[in-house]
Image (cartoon, rainbow, N blue to C red; front, side, top):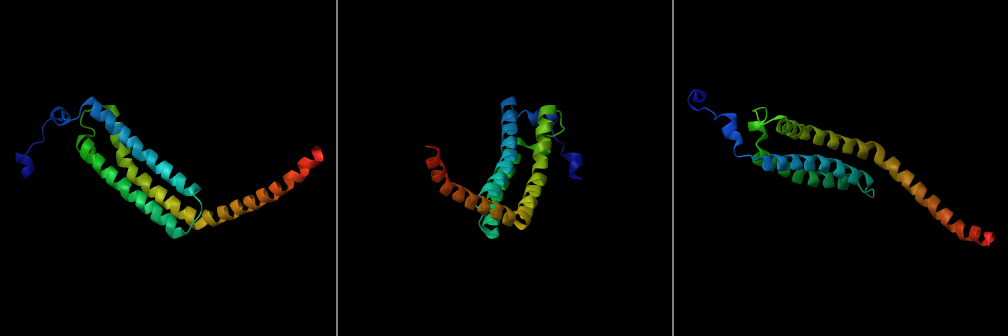
Length: 149
């Protein structure tokens, strides 16, 4: 019923609060959130292997900060209000990526769980084998060099 009496201002009036510089800043921040997901998942996959709990805690800490940034970006960029309202294709693409980010975050979280469950131990064993191999080769290197002189 309130919709009959409360009308939203035209898209141009709603968008007036977002300058082209604001829209570009929104794009950069969305990119930062996307890149943050990629970088953090890679960092955790490459980190020295600890317990599953440590891996999960590290991801949870990152995820909390990421969620705060994602929510704050909605406040600044108003994607849910302004997407597909005539601000242009560039803004709408940025809004689409913004709306897709939570799904990507969930997929990374699931990937981290699978990594922890399925690959982490195997990768740890391969790293240990390579470390032992390198140590063995390092012990042999001085003797080999002496024969070449």
